[in-house]
Image (tube, rainbow, N blue to C red; front, side, top):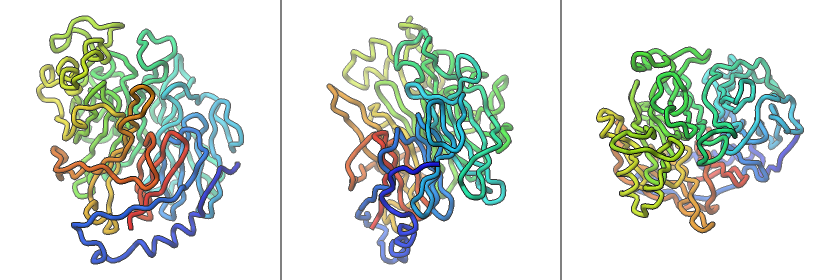
Length: 426
């Protein structure tokens, strides 16, 4: 157990919530809130995700360090480290980081007070050449340790260093978001690892959204096509790093990172196909370098995103006419769409009920473009978007990796650069 840099005591923040929690009349629904911020933690190593207890206790992961918890008094307990980590209560030597891979999503069980279950998605060397695993742990009553590791899903593909696919490097495209839905099931998003066969494969769990119970069994009603792994809820995805649930309908909606164009937001349908298929000779394409068409030179050289999308569509309706249609495609741009959440509460004014997505941005000549949080006014069915606006960030931009609304009603944002912020509507 050790401490990180903590710039505010969470107990004081919870007290400040009383001043934020004003009656609905104080926030006319047509008005957008003014935003301020506080730095929750800084000096972290690639913070990846967060999960909250009702009292504001915050579990968080760091991609190449491990799992920790921030207590209400501001103390940080380091619970589970990875290969090479120091200062943790325990270490899992099979967990490692490489490229985009490492310790990623985290979620608390809805019945945490009774079962103390916490779920973590991480890359493991336990089976060659490596896999991504969803693990369940039991958290001690004093929040100083985790135990009883149970690997619920052991076989999500991982891209090894020896991969024949050169784009992106080892450890690429793992997905990684872990969330409980209002239906009580656990959702896990995964990535295609730059494997041409992976997204449409009925058995490989990459490029999928998986839905299971807390013991790892397939959820009832997944409706996976015949011959598919029954844990698969949707398939044909590229790299889903965000999933959120509409506050009125419970509709699961994903945020997906696209290929040189078209980050997408999509309402999921049980058994649905996301339409991503980077295999050669699909939809009239010919051969592609290294057997993966997701970065074929034709689209890399085409400066017009529409030309890129025509050659290598993110959702290939020509091949899969019944694919799930995206509600929004980021105006035909790929800027690294990652986490997603819904804002709820009168303190958010006109943004109450709207979806927020974080974008990590891309670099042109070393200058990042598109690092932001977008606010999306989405239809209840998730099939269309009424309006998209950019959040005026009080703390500046960054590679927004995770967005989570805390129990205090405020938005917590983690950026790859090492900070976790608390964004406060006033």
